[in-house]
Length: 454
Image 1: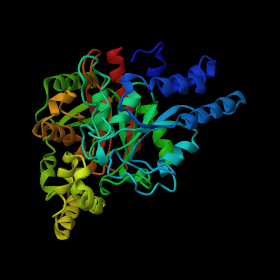
Image 2 (image 1 turned 60 degrees about the vertical axis):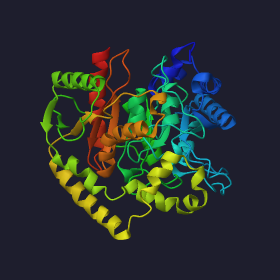
Image 3 (image 1 turned 120 degrees about the vertical axis):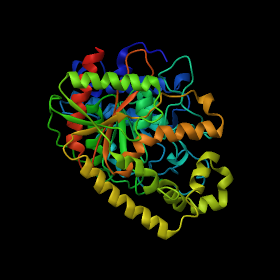
Image 4 (image 1 turned 90 degrees about the vertical axis):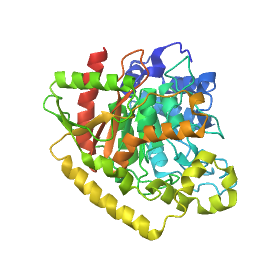
């Protein structure tokens, strides 16, 4: 998609500056977005557009600005919401076809309602993996949004928040409200060259979000910068994080030897090593650690896995009545959880609690865990036509990010590739409740990486 100006690549702060100077209005921006959303590059990004509501929010923001009212960061700016969030009066489809005919939502999801309260111009619902159950982003019902990072090859956007990522990457939204159960914010952010923030699960209410796995589901978003992610987080959590900026010098960053680098592609390894060199040169202490506990994830998550077991409960009636209507690959993963006994599920929960405590202890004294967000770059969509290739890629995409969901931790994915390269994400992670401190680390790391590429 060719744009006449750079408006579609600006951060929230840069857009606010243009609006303050009078060279851009909220309404003009939203009109540009709505027009661009109909272009071929945006095919399969949205499952529904809210043109009239978005225009109304933009006009309201323009009127308030003209009257001298100080606006919040999201007021009048285009934001997208993933198709798993309730909007009053609509059936929430969650990227599926089998929900057709189910009762409409009575009210907006909490996160959506809070975005509206902040004046955001919600431009539409975005496409996703069916029921948020894969890290690839392919959807057989509504099509697959193409990753904008490669004009020559149709590559996956990552999932499950596929449309959310592409909406931001194309500049159709300053932020995409998504969700993260095993990496569904961070994976597409990494593959599309964006910033994704997975908060501690309890930070944002999940009310009105279509459930995948209640032990892991997290309401969060992606945007163009750490600051933009924090602005959205403040809106949907209803309270901003108390972030105290810190210099990079002296920060202790742990690089785990276990699991996170297995099967890494050369392009990802090169980008990661460059990032580590940049951070070390800027004064960060990058420390190699074993973190052997990461090797226990398969045991902690067995049998079946938290997501399949809990998803099988969510979809029990749909699965029994309309399994043939599911994406066959999603159905195969849900089926893994249908025969798991209650005693085994309780044992999984017990093992997880013990594992979290031990990992938290191992990370004491470090400011963040540092690793690639995913070990591969975005593969071509056509390369995943066969199930074996799809599930291999899905496993690799989810592996690193899932570890932080299992930990109930918080994490940022930051772009760390060089101009002209396919996007690569650098994941900074920490333990539950450490969101504000991690945000300070992410701001410092982002600044160093941007200085390197400038």
